[in-house]
Length: 473
Image (tube, rainbow, N blue to C red; front, top):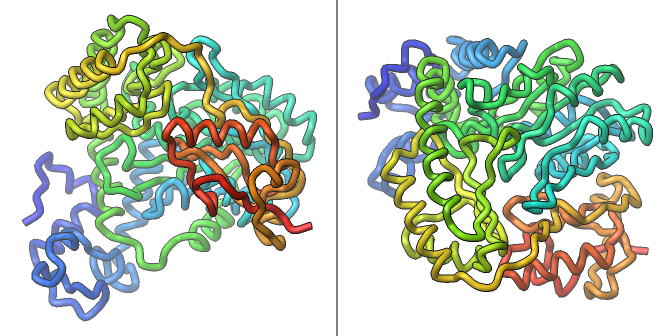
C-alpha cells in the first residue's frame, strides 16, 4: 500500500487522490489496460494511475489538477502554472507556441536545450542566436549577458520574445534580473528554461528563481532536482506579457490527452514538500555539497566548479589539469554502480539532490578520488565543448529546413551545405548543428572530435557522422 511518510497529502490534492485510489481501489473499466494487475507484466506498472477516471472523474469534476496547479503558482509567485508529464521538452514547446508565430523573430540563447529548437519549428519562429560568455579558466559557459541581449535587439529590433536557459547544464548562473530589465525595456517577455533550477529560490544560499528576478515565464523540471517522477515539469508564467489563453492552447496542442496521474501527483507532492520543508532540506544539501567540493578541491589539478555564480548544489568537475579522461573515470564509476549525469573528456557532472545523504555522497567522492588517480596523466590545456563555442550561421529558418526536401551526403561533401537535421553531443543535448544552419568545417571537426573522445552524438540520422542530412539543391 502506498504511503505518505512526511504527511504531505493534506496540502497536495493530486497526491491525496493518488493515495486514495489505492486505499479504496475501484474495479475500473477504463484505461490503462493493465487494470492494476501485477501478474501480467510484473511490477513495472505499479503506481500507474491515470488522471482521467483515476485521480479525478472522466470530466475532472473535482478540479484536483487545477487546485494543485494553483498551489504551485502561488508558491513560485506566478499568475498561472501548468503541470506537464512531458518534461521540460513539452513545456518549452508550449511556450514557443505562446510567444509568437510564423516568421516572428526571437532572441534565443544558444545553450538552450534542443527541445526549444523543435519548439521554433512548431511555431515557425526564426531564431537570432545569443552566444554565452565562456569562462577561459574552465571552458564552461557563464550564461547570456544582458549586454548580449541588447546587442541582439540591435540585430532584430522587432523580436517578439527572448528565450534563454538559466541555470546552465553545468550549474553556472547568469544575471536573470539584468536580462529581464533589458528585455522589458523592449516591451517583450523573457522566457527562462530553468529545467535545472526547480530548487532555486527556496533557501537563502540558493539563487532566486527566475520569476523572483523578473522573468515572465519559466520552465522547470521537477524530476531533475526535486523528488518527482521522470517527465515531471512545470510551466510558471505571469500574465503581463504572456497571453495565458495562447499558452493554454500551446500546452494542450503539444501535451498528451492521457496524462499519467502518478507523474502529476508527484509534482504536487514535491511542491508540498518544497513549501513545507524545502529550506531545511536544501540547506542540508548545500552543506553536504560544500563538504564534498572541499574534499575534491584538494586533488592536484582538479577544478571543482564553485563561487557566487554557481548553483551551490551542483557538482561539476573539470579534469583537464589532472590529465585523466572523463569517459574513463565514468567507466570506473559505472563499474562501482555510481552513474553520473555527464562525462566527456574534460568534465564530470553529477546531480546531487535533497534525496542524497552523507553516505551516498561519500561513496561518490571516494570513487571519484580513486578513479581520477587511476587515470591521471599529463595535464591538458583547457578547452571548451563544441556546444559552447561553434558559431552558428543561419541560412534559413528551422521550420523551412525541417520540411524541405532533403538528401544525404558524405560528411566531407556536406560542408558548406544547409543542414537538415539537429546534431548534438548528448549530454547536454545542446545543438552544434541545427536545421537551417550552414555546415561549417569547424562544426564537423568539433563533432568528429566528440565521437573520437567517446561521446554519443545524438539525433543525427547517422550517429557515426559518416554522412549528414542536408537540404536538397
